[in-house]
Image 1 (cartoon, protein in one colour):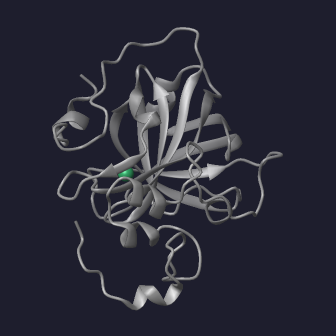
Image 2 (cartoon, protein in one colour):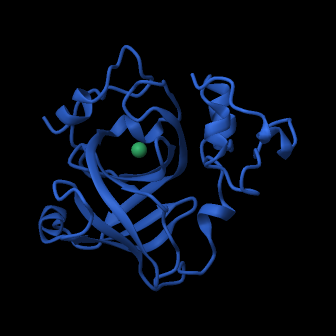
Length: 227
Ligand code: MN
């Protein structure tokens, strides 16, 4: 039931994304946490927290910040199947979310208060992450009257002050996949995607390809095709 919106948006004959077997709730097992770096129409980071057999999802345009003084906009999106937490690859042109997806971080999470449903309702979820890149205490706070589309649910993702807080720019300093160590451009290359466009999400000198064999000035050459 909860995956209807997810499935409605996608053509599984055309996209390699998982359809999702179902939403069997696990008992007594740790909950999945994942972040996917997604170079779609715009670059964003999809934060996913397993709850009640699906992945609650938020698109964070600027990605997470380890600095407690920095609040990052997080738009709640449709629930995803738990299998999605392992997805990395290319969503073909013309499909929903077309672009390159990197598994940027993965691990487990714990809600800091037992009743997650009540926290969701109240618009404040405090949680602890045990990922490869992100750890420690975080909060998602629901905000209202922000953004042009009131139908979308707008939240802020904020790091709490703890031993894992820092001013390190984690998205810039740790740009590679935790699953494959690849950059976006390499995932696009391997998956037959748009390397040029994917490379725009990789760090480095603005406009410089992070992984291409060609030097930076190769970027001056026009894109020959986009499919
Ligand atoms: Mn996305």
